[in-house]
Amino acid sequence: MTDVVEATFDIIKGCLERGEKVKISGFGNFVVNTKRPRKGRNPQTGDEIIIVGRKVLTFKASQIMKKSLNGISSSSPESAPSSSASE
Image (cartoon, rainbow, N blue to C red; front, side, top):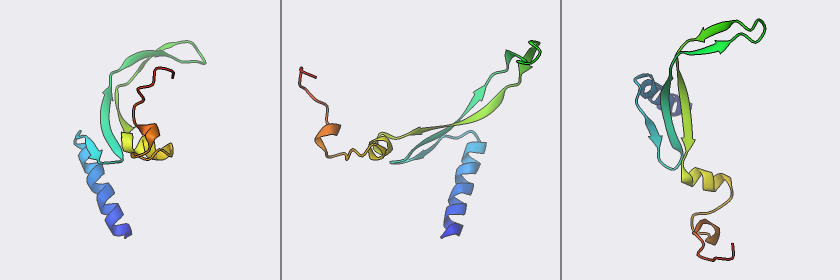
């Protein structure tokens, strides 16, 4: 079983290294974003420095995952939009 998981992670890692988005249905999306270089300050000396640009990995959970984490089933009344004006 660990071989399957490792192989899956290797495929995902390869896709992300190539700059591709990875979507896992019912789980979420992984995206590589590029941050530009920017000015910053050294907090100890106050000197201005340039913070180099870099790539960052972001993850956004799917609505299904968010509902699951919050204990809301997709068929429960709480997950349906309410039309009541009293709320």
